[in-house]
Image 1 (cartoon, one colour):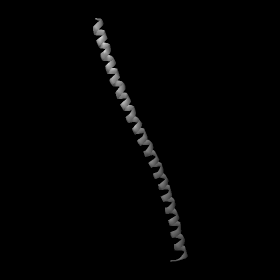
Image 2 (cartoon, one colour):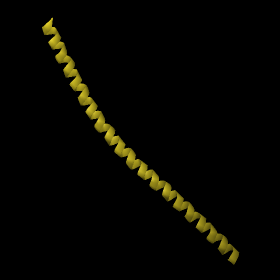
Image 3 (cartoon, helix red, strand yellow):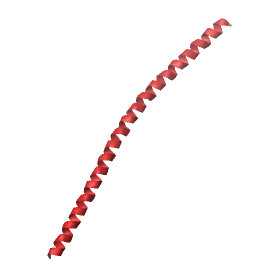
Image 4 (spheres, helix red, strand yellow):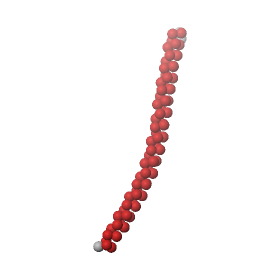
Length: 73
């Protein structure tokens, strides 16, 4: 293998290492984004449970109001 071939191969190796590093950084960002997505999904589920509770309370309030109105009439 000639010196020129070795230099070309080394340049190729360096280029590939730079691509690997770039891809690793992209993967790191993607994993970080996924962690945030999962945290957001958990918060959404928690908020949905709270909303469900509010809706149930509203149904009870409406039922109570209907009872009061029926007693008044």
